[in-house]
Each structure stands twice: as C-alpha cells, then as structure tokens.
Image (tube, rainbow, N blue to C red; front, side, top):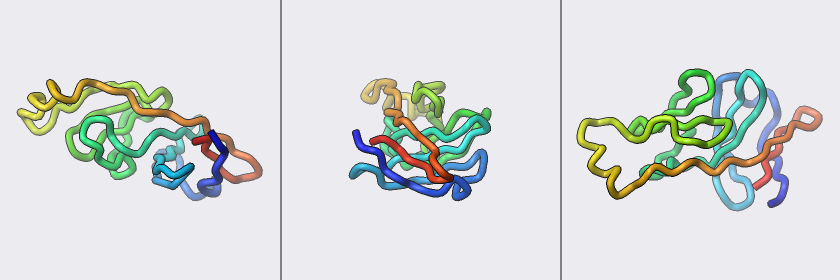
Length: 115
C-alpha cells in the first residue's frame, strides 16, 4: 500500500463524506467527530456509491439504494439490504460482506489515505 494525498483537512466538514481516487481505486473519506476514516466507495451489496449515501447514527453510512448500513470505523455490516420490500430475495445471492477500510493520516492539514 502507498500513501496518497486526497484532500485538505477543511475540504470535508464534520459529518461529511467525499469520494477520491487513491491508488487506482475510488475510496470514500469520512470526517467524523473523532477524525477521518476511509473505506471502499462501492457498497458490497450491489456496488452503489457510498459517498452518495447518508450518514446515520454518527458513525454509520447508509447505502442510497437498498439501505445497507456499515460502521465507518470498522467497515462491518450493521444492517444488510432491507429496502424496498422484496430486496431480501437478492440477499440469498449477495451474502453480507464488510467494506474494506484504509488507514488515514492527517499531516500539516492534509489528509492521506493508504491504499
């Protein structure tokens, strides 16, 4: 893994998320109350862009398509796809899968992701 500069510290407000390229892939970078975190940007259910999702409960991201929720700090699944009714039938084909997470460092006001 290599260290990639993705943005300035002030580019993402607390509670915000943005997508950036890092190491040939797109990552989501989150700014929580306790710092910055990064995960893969694609939902592991059906690959929707998580940076278009909504932040819930302070440290979770909800996918914009089927409401799958992930813990931003660990990448773990909090709630697997549950919307619209009937999407659970797809869950037989798409088993729960955590997000990849990436180390983040802030140095002199710049945010770096190791990817």
